[in-house]
Every structure is written in structure tokens, then in C-alpha cells.
Image (cartoon, rainbow, N blue to C red; front, side, top):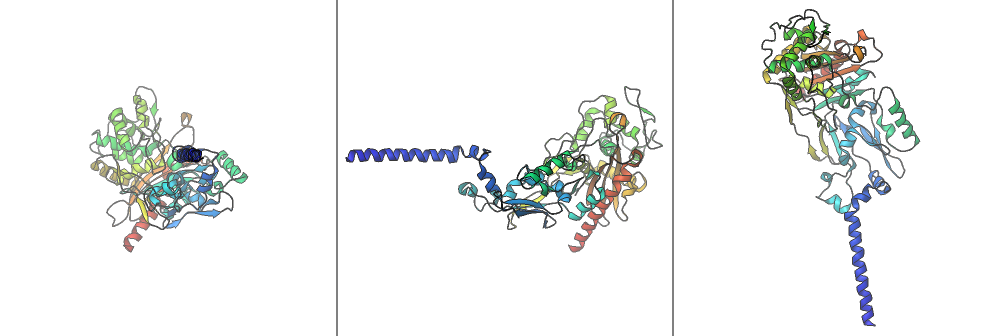
Length: 493
């Protein structure tokens, strides 16, 4: 009898060991696949069992959470949703996450290990911490100025602090309320269909993910290339580029909107936006050096993150001379995001160096303890400091006595460049109005802000849309607010 009892006990021990091994296999080896299984509702239920952390602007949250009383309990809410949608994105129980809600999802959802009190704490407890907060670099009053300036027209505004790369304004218009996508059910599905079928494409982040032909605003890049390559040594000396200018290898004549461009100096060409001079200089610099110069500004970079991904700004690496001429004035296949063009203005303002742009100042625990802070990092040296200083003077002249007078701010030093980008077959499409600029307040040691504005107004008459007329006033109001904030902080400090 005892022998049988021992055998039964041994069998039980073997079965128990097998059970423990199988449980370990399920918890360790298969845990990932089980977590990712769409049929596993526990993951979704756990994800929405507690409120998300907040996205913060100027010390105030622009997000919130609502107890729905449903199985997926906590739904995301947004304060001034359309104003901050290009920053926050959406966090939807049906459609997932975008922009900061996506890039910082682990912090906001409380699953990031940096929020845990001890290393491996979340793995051991299979739990999560209260959602952390994401403190942005956005200045609320500047954001509002830009949003109101666009007034619902299609376009975007980006403002950065040249010395640090902090993104101060990120506006895309038209916009939408991310809160309508937060939950589940028929209303959410109807809102999704409505937003995706809208002609205005309100969910498109035009500031980060839409590229436009930059037009004459790109001439700042071509001017930098010409100066760095030694093609131009004296900005006030006449060039030998004629008007009319025939595109190399063709019979096509490149027109000018301005007068007096025949043989004009680089200074005159920037001030009055001469197509012929800038196209001719691009050809003289040559394809190889133009590509090198343009890529130093960040064009053709597919890896830029802020931390959301940014669309690639393009400048072709293989072109014929006539195509290079057109590309040098921001046409042909050249395309740029508004962020990229703000970086161009920032490079001029910051002695040729571009600081890597970023949107998150720091992340914190729910209690406010900083867990990670974004450090300033250099992105590219776009041009030599001496070239940047000369371009500063040329852009200042363009505002004081050229095409950018609508951006002038009394008492401040402002440099700018207009752009009216032609597009469509035979340039018959409505032009895009560009303005890029930077501003330095009185008594300040360096420029406080660099800005890019693009306006695409399908309802405007072709002759009524221009960088100086449509985009420059928006840039001015944003820069004025940046200088006001800088002055207030200086007084408070």
C-alpha cells in the first residue's frame, strides 16, 4: 500500500512540476503574444482603467479625462481642442493615438518604466503607475495669435526659439476637436468619417506633415549656398545674371515679378525677390554644392522627430541645369514643411547653427517629479557664422524697405523673406503665400523667435495672395507676442 501511495505522490509531484513549467511558459514565453492578441480584452480594459496623464501648456493642462462608466472606463477630453490638436493629436479608444498622445503614450498611460519607484517594478507587479505628465514648450498666447491669424484658412504657423530649438508655436488650420474621437460607439465612427471626408482635411498636421513648394522663401537657402561657396563675395556688387534669363538648355524665359533685376546684386535680389538672380546663382553654385548646402539645413532628412515624426523636406539630388535653376527659387520638385522653413529662419538668426527642434520640455510623474528633461542639442551647422551675419542684414533690409514691410515691429530688429510659391500645371493653381522671419527685441542679445507661415487659400483671387500680404501680418503678430513674453520674463527675472 505504501508503495502505491509513494507512486501516486510522485506522479502528483511530476504533474505539479509540469503545471508550474507550463504556467511559467505561458507567463514568460507566451506573454507577449497573448498581450498582443486582439481577442484579449484585459489589455484594453487595463489601459483605460485609470486616467491618462496630462499634456501641459504654460503650466496648465490642455487635456483631461472623463469617467464614462463603461468597461473602457476613462475617456480623453481636451480643453481648447482645435487650438492644440496639432500638438496633442488624439487618444481614441477606437482609433488609437497620434502626435504627442502617441509619441509619449507610455508616460501618459503610466506604463513607462521611468515612472516606477524601483527598476523592473512594473514587470514584477504586472501593473502600471498613475499616468505621468508631458510638459510642452508651447507658449499659449503665441499659439492663440497664430490660430486667430489663420482664421480658418488652410495653412500653418511654426515658431521656434533659435538658440534652443524649443517649438513655441505649432498651428495647423483648419483644425478639429480631438475629443470627438475619444470614446467608442456610433458617434465616434460618424465623427471619424466626417473628419476624413472633409475637403479641408482638418486632421492633417500641415505644420509637421505637409510639404509645400517653398517658392521665394527658399531664396535664403540659395543665398547662403552662394555665399558659402564664394560665388558671391560682395552682397552689394552687381551680378552678371541678365534679365530676361533663359533657363539653361531650354528656350524658356524665367519671369520676374520685381523690376530692376537685370545684373542686380544679391542684396537687391533678396530684398525684391528677383527670380533671375537667384536661379542663376543656384546654377553657378552647381548641383553638388547646392545639394550639400541644402541638406545642411535639414532637407532630405527622413529621421527628424520632435518627438512626433516630421515629413521629409525634399531637394532633388539629380537634376538638369534648368531644373536646378527652378529648384534654387523653391520651385520644380523642391518641397518643405513649415517646420523646415522655420528652421531656415532660425539658422540665419542663430549664427548659422540650427538647434534640434523639440516640443517636449520634460516629462514628470503624476506628482510633478521630473523623470526626463529634453536637453538642447545641435542639429546642423547650416552655414558659416559670417554668412549668417550677412544674411541677417539682407533679411532686415527686406523688412525695412523691401517686400516684407508688413512684418516690421517698431523698436525691434526683424529680418524676413516673402515667398509666393507657384504650383499646378503651368503654374495655374492658387499660389501658396509664405513668410519666414526672425525678431530680436530691443536690449536683447539675440533673436527671441524664428517663424514660418504658409497660407493656402483656395477662395482667394490669384492676384490677392502673397507672402507679404497674407502671411507676413500673421508672422508679425506671433513675433510681437514672443518679444512681449521675453520682455516680461526679463522684467520678472
